[in-house]
Length: 164
Image 1 (tube, rainbow, N blue to C red):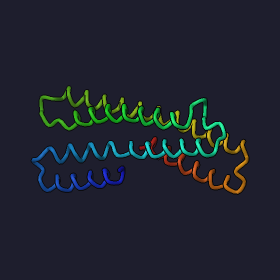
Image 2: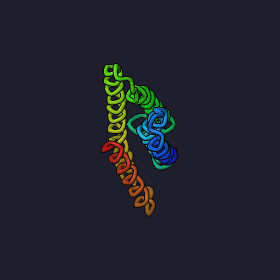
Image 3: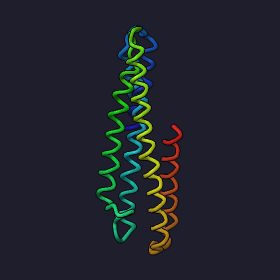
Image 4: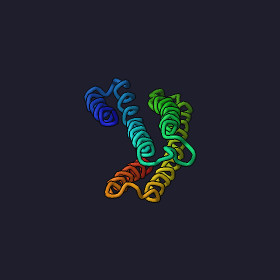
């Protein structure tokens, strides 16, 4: 979904470059570009939850069951998505008298990004906790190396999302 949204964002921007009087192309392209990384977050949340489910005997990390891990963080991501979507749509206002609306939209979007960043930082720490718990268990044997690599890649993805 993230790739499809990014691709559509660039399609809308390209179409909008040829028809610069239509604000709809700009709004659609901007929203899709700003919101696409939320799908990547959801993927990482679900993958780590599955790792917790399959690799840890207690099927929980930090006292949170694997089934609730995905629900909780995806739910928080949806809240962040909605805040960013509202702020992003307000940013696209083309009315010259709407400085305050654009400013409010910018503040809302930045608040949504801040909330998302906080969730990603907490989840990153939790993912490190999963890694340490998997390593401590030591029952994976040769699969431990693959689990370490996967968790390392997921952490790298989360860092890239934070940098964005």
